[in-house]
Structures are given as C-alpha cells and as structure tokens.
Image (cartoon, rainbow, N blue to C red; front, side):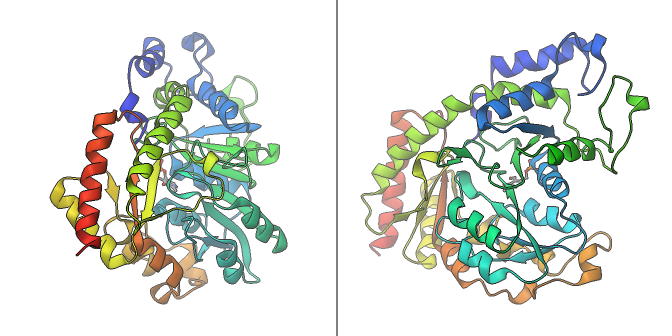
Length: 399
Ligand SMILES: Cc1ncc(COP(=O)(O)O)c(C=O)c1O
C-alpha cells in the first residue's frame, strides 16, 4: 500500500509553500515564488535516492514512460518488446509513440525474461521496454546481456518499482532511460506525477525539452526560449511536486516498514507448503510493496480469491481475471480500437494479438496472487490478516 497511508503535516507544509506564493508553474516566476522550486526539489530527492545523474519530473507515470521512449529515440514503426503483465500505460506509451508492441514471455519473477526477449527479437526490433513489476527488479544481468547481444535499446518502466534495486543499483538506471509513477496508489505519491531518470545527458536534455513543448529552458524569459525539438505539455504542477517532495523524504521509512511487514506475512504464509513465492534474483533490493505468492493451479488461485472475498480479506489482487494488468483483459489492444487512426494501423500489428502464444505467462499469472503490503499495519492487524488468509487458503487446498 502506498504513500497515501502516511500523508500528513509534511505534505501539507510543502503544498502551503506553493499556495502562499501562488507560483504553481514549475518554470520562471522567480520573484513570485520566493525561493520555492518544488519540481526541482522532487528531482533532487529522486536523484539522491536513486543515484541517477539526471531526473526530470512530469505529470504522470504514463507521460514519464512516453518521455523515456522519446528521449531514447524510439518512435514510428519501431518494434518494442513488452511484457503481457504490466499496467496498460506501458503498451499505450509504445503505441502512441508510433511503435509496435511485441509481447514476450515473463518468468516467475513476474518480469520479461531473457529467454522471452530472445524469442521475440526480429530484424525490426529496436528496443525492450522492460517493466519491473509489483515492486521488485527484473533479472538485470541476463536482461542487459540479451539486449547487448541483439543491440537493443533498453528502456525501463519502473512505474511500480520506486525503491527497488538490483545488486545495489536502482531500477531505471540499467537502460538508457527509466520512468517512475507517483500516482495516488504508489509507494510515494504526488497525487499524480512521474519522474524520468537517466545517466545520459543527451537523453535528459531531450526529456526536458520534450515535456514542455520543446522549450530549451535557457535564460529566464520563457517567451524568448528556443525550441530544439517538437514537444508537448507533460509538465508537473508545483502543487503535485510539493506532495512528492514530502513523500520522497519518507521513502526510506516506508520501504523499511513494508519490508518488515512483508517478511512477517511471508513467514506466516510459509507454513502452507502448497504456496510458493516470487523468486527474486536480488531479494535485498525488493521495495517490499507486494507479497507475491503462487497456488499450485490457477483453479485454486481463483478459488482462494473467492474465499478471501467471503472472509473479508482485503488487499489481494488476482491479475489473471479481474484486474487491468494482464493481456487477457485487453480486448481494445488486441482489436486496436482507438479514437483515431494510429501508426500501428498503418504498419499493421507485428503479431496476431488475438492469438498470442504466451503459455508461460498465462500459467504464471493464473497461479499468482499479490498482497499489497501496508507500511502502517500493527502486529494485531498483521496477525488477524495472516490468520484469515491462512484459513481461506486451507479451505481450498484441503478441499
Ligand atoms: C508499470 C506501470 N507503468 C506506468 C504506469 C502509469 O503511471 P500513472 O498512473 O502515474 O500514469 C503505471 C501505473 O500504475 C504502472 O504500474
């Protein structure tokens, strides 16, 4: 569960700084803003936390992914390998960039696997849009290796993985560009917001221009700025950035609490020998956002969810059928339904989206249940939840 749990005086103070001056725009207005630069502060906090050389805050995680693709030079007609298990924004970002999503297999770590990527590569593949799903990193050694072997640009959608590291390095820094979401449901929220990170100065400058109608942000006269590239308005407001600043300063505490609570729940549920857990390549780098566990069959996972509903167990997601995170629910993508014609209509889809062959992903997501971990649970709440979950799961596995 997200940063919204700890929204409090710190967030209000940051917002009040903005409201007291009225300077809600992130650029210029030096006199009016009285030294408050919330978008810049958010970027500084994200740089400090992730170790990125550059960070650029935008209006949402979706626009951060869109910007990450643009800044990496991915666009019209490019095939981009994507996972079938992600939030739909990943796929939308590729399609609106003019790219052609190619779906590849994930593994039990819930992210694209190197084998999956390898099988999906064609001569037209330009990039991999890797998604670090449900709070932890993909297997970065093997993913970066396969990208290098095939000369593919790696872009990371870390929309759900702020706070996740792999062997000490933040997600978002393995590829050319990476994107975080700060929407209302994330570990740190700005209400709405996103942040792009990169260690590449050229990509950063492109992102900075692209997200503000191409403005170069040189000088202090906005009306006289140059426009090196075409862009659009993906700006974050100072009000949203202010909330994000306060939340970033709570992130270490949120991760610590979540990891502790997750371990507590995992220890309890581990008593059930029928369950297995997400095998993370670097468990220390987990952000603690979700406890992901597998039932022996998808029938059992569906039945457990029914028992959870009967027993009032809250906070579990069964992405296979009832959530917007798996390809089985994406008829509008499969049928390319859109408000207006897009590049993918012109080029044609690179795969038969209605007959995708992704048996491994189907099998894995069918058996998966994800428990969202709260940072503020006390021991009584943890015990009560664990007991209810164990009781419900036992009813199914012993049936
Ligand atoms: C993996 C992933 N990418 C992108 C996004 C989009 O972020 P936002 O809701 O901030 O636009 C999300 C949101 O849930 C996400 O989970």
